[in-house]
Image (cartoon, rainbow, N blue to C red; front, side, top):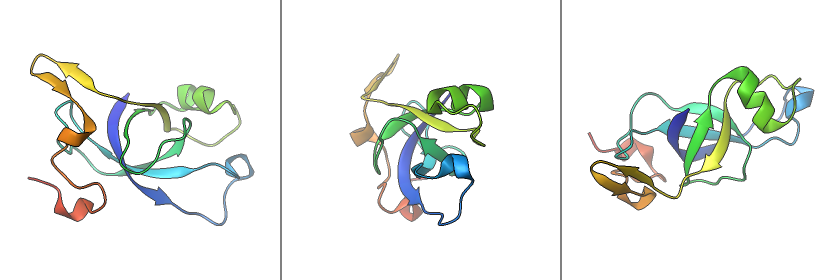
Length: 110
């Protein structure tokens, strides 16, 4: 599973027939402190997430297809939940604690 922030929409006018009507989102992985980690990636939205939401993704094909409820869909990553907060030994972290502006990921903190 991958903790991420939704940073954008991905629009495709031509898609596989199993993805017609699917909402594709651009995600930035973050660590439990909200720090960006890794490269952005695309996931199918399985829960009605929006830009700025902290989400939990499943990046394993069979499990992702089960969440999306279409075993024939050509997906390997799906948004499986919208996260309210993360409790760690360092305390509670929520999206508003993220060190970057999700509307402009070019200005992410180092």
